[in-house]
Length: 564
Image 1: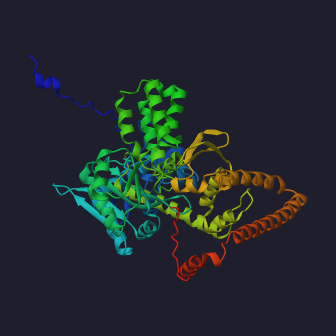
Image 2: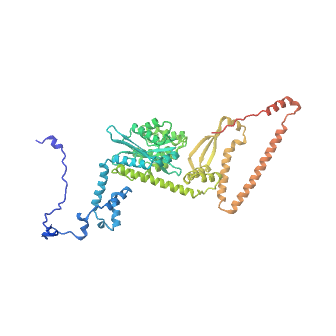
Image 3: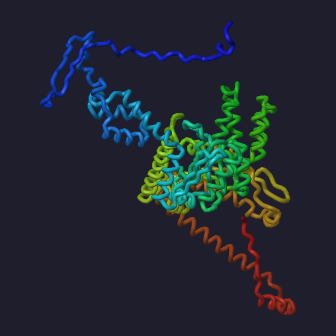
């Protein structure tokens, strides 16, 4: 009878190894004689196998050696981020073929494996701590912290250099904190802190490895980050959809606006679409809710319509997303600075630009090397942007008004392009009065050919209505001004390419300006004459004049109300 325990025992299949020994007697033996010279004592010429071919000589062990020069070369290339096979192929190309390298591809793979094992045997996490300590000795403002678990093992590591602190001082209004990256052999969570610089490109603020995604770990990480950053808090922080992280943010920085990256929402939504994944109309409806809503009423209407049409009212994920609408809906997030992260394009760019070339086999020390190269690449891009900005002025196809000229002088090229786009939208808007009552006028502002952009705005409050009643001409001031601006703007565009039309426009402007000034002066004289004719007789109003004289001798303060 077979023992039950024996049945469950797994036996390893023996390794299949080719036989390389044939008990060949061929040899040559020598010994040192009395004169100190080598003397052949035996020589068997006959082999019991075929002899090797000349083209195979470099594969023999006697012809293969990993020299110190090759070791240095391989280490340098590995630190540059090249894969093991990339380093071998480069050396083979440089030597004129793999037969001239002096070692085989197997030797190369084994050496790189031993190189990695040396780091692990020495303690990969400890090796990284040693590297960070070395960075601290070279950069006095370098900051790093290490947290140990109850067993004394390293569980969290955080670091930032001095330039990251300088960047955060300047660009730290908006912070992107992403913990979705896990590519390393220990499955640790990589948590880079990223910002947006004045060229609308990413800049690195700090980075960390954490062992888990608990509230305690996030609290430690955020507290450490702000300690490293002189306790400067951001205006807004963008993260993925993680409740433990949200708890930590509420505890550490309760006054910072916490928002969700639209890019992460889109990626999560794709996995929840199910059978609707191929439905183009549903995708369009979802994107309308995610990006296109201007007002809260519009968002609510479109969201409820989408849930009803596709029977999603009881879907738990959509319920959860709706409960978090204040953290991602554009119509509800217009009252704070976001550096464009609320837009899907900017959010995706920030998350994709990390660009770590790592794999599941990447060690912590290898990852740190890759991280430094990524950071240096970003800084190199920033230097190039600064150089380009210092040597050029933004060009625009629009006529350079005073506002655009000023923007071109003070904005970087990237920011000017965004401002130019918004300026173009402004010129393309149309106003339509929807109605009025005793308290306000209601207008609808819309971009041409984009009905979804319609936005209703109130023109005046009760005090303004009192000034505009009785059909005061100023009642139509804003829509009339907008209409005339668009007319003249289109006329300028038509005239700018021809010298004669430009001269005609300039002369017409001078004539129009003079006529307007003359008309305004005539109107002012007429108002003065009417006011003089209404002055009461002095003899009949002695007491009134006395009072008026007394009042006129007293300084009167008129309150000025500024529209926020």
